[in-house]
Image (cartoon, rainbow, N blue to C red; front, side, top):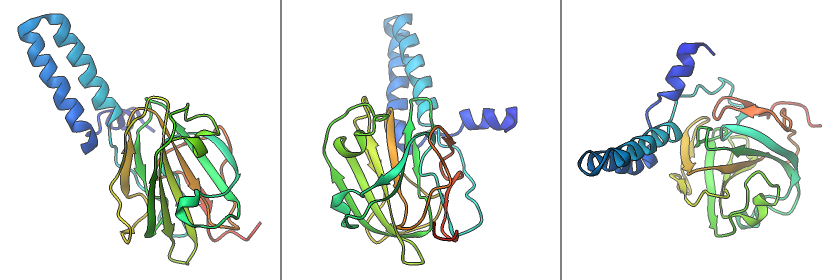
Length: 226
């Protein structure tokens, strides 16, 4: 990535979910001009942070329709077999789960991992433990999404709140037809996103890798079983 690309990435327009925070910061700046410079500086710092945190750069998914991509930016903290959230009704058979941890420095816009149809969305209230911990997938507040791929395979994407995250935004509805790389939501201020692969499909990634949401390939549906 060139320097120009890096600059465009940082200066990308904000996601709509960040606009109330940005407007609020600007209001504080204006009030600070009347009350005192310390308040104006505080408002400016908050506004700049929100512009950075809610940035929403364009992404280019791979051209192949039989690939699954990362649903979020961040670092992979776990690649292991796990049973999908029970509320999605995907059965009790373990399948490969790839867990991505997002810090406040990552882009927090979630993206659809592959073409398909949304079959179920289920929100579950829970705890707010550190999202980098494995138990966050089970204990934390989450929004779980099940999708059916064109070939009939089923996947799940789970938006998980973190230690300081308190708001999960999802714009999908059951029955929606979605495409790889589409934006579908955002988690505010540190979080985790899990991707459950179809049964029999193995991931192409490992713990410690850095993901680019909507671009990094996680699995190849056309790969031979095993």
